[in-house]
Length: 333
Image (cartoon, rainbow, N blue to C red):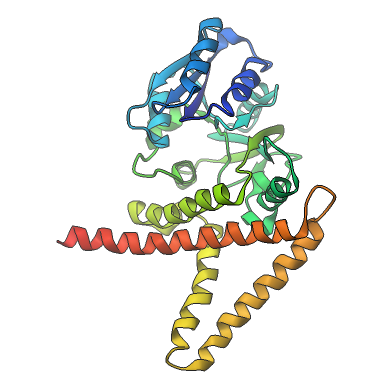
């Protein structure tokens, strides 16, 4: 038995595609369950899931009254019957052979978790949304995130995977997802696996489609929260080791602009490091955008997507610093 766990909250635009991809999986339905853990959606998500559940007994809807992702994952694990647990995003589409490949490589590698590549797409393709896709699939956009930027032709040892397939006994050994972490709970869990001596592999021939944000406003909102939760993750886990260096690069860049600018109020020459940092950044994104630009994108949209991604992420981390300071002040009182 294998258990698929899908956290859901107001996903009516994406959920049918996700469910249909699960139904089309090349794996016996009798040996599979799909648990949709819903955070009390206010759109049509619940109705859509229930409609499918009435047709397919392996599809189940479970309530998540805590309404946060890590709680949804833990509820799913606690209610699952499978020997293996697969975490899936409601924004994603599974490849037909995903389960077969997961089980095959688990058997071959005897590891704790495996996962496939993430192919970023959007529901509505236009030059702006296609530019965002290109940026979210580029190393300069998302760092050395192997599952986004590197196609696996053989099993690759990595620090985390999206849509991971875990042996269920891993959760008994190192615990469930940290419910304090509204974001990054999967990355922090992967770090615990590695710290316990476990291994995580990115495997070949398993490519999930993930539907990303397709406008600058949603891209900024999402990455502002990502940056914020990088700092809060460090605060709650009390270690930088929960994350990788790539998660802090945008924050370091923002500091390279802000700190010299503030110091320049005392001595003007401090403005030069800030200007140099900004100039170097612009030269890089212009060069990368020129390389990425094709008949599906526009140069200016690519540049703006890089700006939106990096600045929202970096400022999110800056907000996180102030939030941690406020929390510590509150604790002291």
